[in-house]
Structures are given as C-alpha cells and as structure tokens.
Image 1 (cartoon, one colour):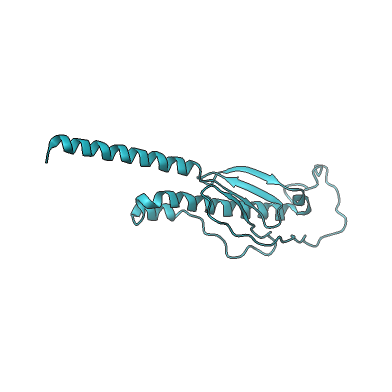
Image 2 (image 1 turned 45 degrees about the vertical axis):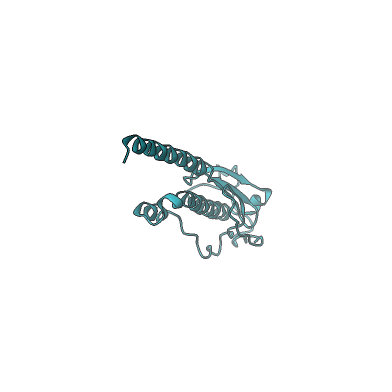
Length: 167
C-alpha cells in the first residue's frame, strides 16, 4: 500500500473520530431531565451526571407534611436521575454498545421503583427530556396527612412550623 495514502486514511479517521467525540460530548452535556411529581408539588431538574440543578415547589407543597415533601422530592429526583442516565447511555451506545465499558456505564443507571411507599407522593410525569424521548404521566394524587393531635405545643425554635430537628 502507498504510504502517503495510508497516512491520509489515518488522518481522515482521526478527524472523524475527533468530530464524533465532540458531538458525543455535546449531546451528553445536553442530557438533563426535568420531572414534576404526580401531584404537581415538586419539579426538579438534574444534570447529565445526576446532580440536582433546580428544584421548585408549587403552592401545593404547603399541603404536605415535611416527611411527605421530602419523599416527593426524592422520588422526583430519582426519576429524573434515571432519565438523565438513560439519555447518556443512549448517546454512547452507538460507539460502545456491547462492550464491557457500556456494561459498566449502564450498571450505574438507577432502577425506577415499582411502587412508592404508601406515605410518599407518587412519581409524576416527565416535563422535559433533552433528547426528546416520551415520558409517562400519571393522574395527580393528593397526599394524605398522617393522623396526629389537633393541637401541638409550640417549641421555642418552632418559628417555621416544622418543629425541632430532634424530636
């Protein structure tokens, strides 16, 4: 084979690889996910690495106990993290599908829970996925408050209405 032709082929392959790598990096940077809880109380956005980027509470969040609100936030974050992780995997799959590297990457995709705990608000619909895959939606579910005393004794540091941390 002609050495000049070999060098030209290697350079063309290197340029193609660099272009595909840049495209893949850009797609991964854009692979975030935004999810709203089924009851509409919480909306979260996570980055491609699963890091929480934004959280927003609707006025409905005020109807939740602090435990229910925490559960609704965590359920929405887990769902958004799973969606973002699947987006990243879909971006790299054409290059690495069927390899140990791909198996390693997909082993970190969070598994979505089959059913939330009874006291938790159910996971809701996907508001936005950068890569455009359809998301499911569920009808809104109004959370129930746990039964408790009608009147609660005020604590000195109970200014926010949530009570002390160590109760």
